[in-house]
Image 1 (cartoon, rainbow, N blue to C red):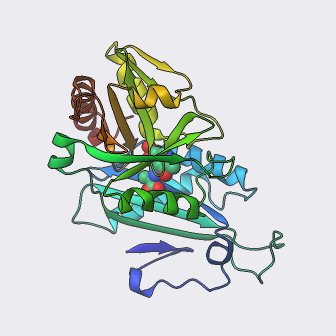
Image 2 (cartoon, rainbow, N blue to C red):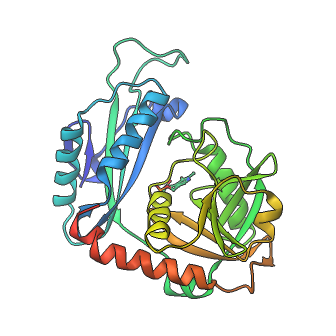
Image 3 (tube, protein in one colour):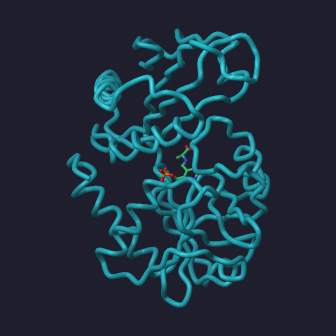
Amino acid sequence: MIYLNGQFLPLEEARVPVLDRGFIFGDGVYEMIPVYSRRPFRLGEHLCRLQASLDGIRLANPYSQAEWERLIGELIARNPGTDDLSLYLHVTRGVAPRDHAFPADVVPTVFMMANPLTTPSPAQLEMGVAAVTTVDNRWLRCDIKAISLLPNVLLRQLAVDGGAVETVLLRDGFLSEGSASNIFVVSQGVLLTPPKSNLMLPGITYDVVLELAAAADIPHQVRPISEAELRGAAEVWLTSSTKEVLAVATLDGQAVGDGRPGPLFQRMYRLYQEFKTKVMRKGSV
Ligand code: PDD
């Protein structure tokens, strides 16, 4: 079952008018919330980021936090069978005659769906994955989780074309993020990641990894990372709600470190899985 504008219905029955501004302009924002053991992880943080994205595109939030929580709970309840889900929610500026300017008095379109959560395969975890790099040619509001993902789609396809799983983006000689993930590197024994800014999405998984690093006394710094540091890194990791923490084994065909997931990755992966069992599955943050 999916949720569309106040109704729960089968996906095949869901219809959106072609003049929806999401379809015409990509005028909307979204969230992807992982659900573990039927409990949405960091729902408050995801709803807070949704609010920031809505503010970023000047669209009033159609629901209160309590309403979102209730609807998300109901969507999970209506999708029995799988305990771990990826919950996608999406708000567009609604249906109106095509004109770039905001329409007056339009009702936003709200869509939500829940799919089984697919995390990296055992082989990917053991061997790491291939990534490629390219220039980050997206706009300057990458902190907004916008549904207009054409730049990310094109960037990600470069990875697929090169037999890789992710494209790591560099802007003005510095690491920004991946096409659908945040990036961490290990350099001289220190875990590094770029500071949140308008140039990247403030990842919820990014926050978790930094918290786990702090709690485990892993030396870490949040600071700009140059292209040279990225290329010379002993380890490179991707983080996202669906990839969790995943090691990059090759970058543009060159081995990262010794070309296998490194020791700090192994440690962080264990910490993350432990956190998942003890915290995420219990519904606490
Ligand atoms: N993407 N950066 C970008 C550009 C992303 O699209 C994502 C997530 C992230 C990581 O954010 P989080 O840790 O909150 O998942 C960073 C989701 C999974 C998607 O588009 O499917």
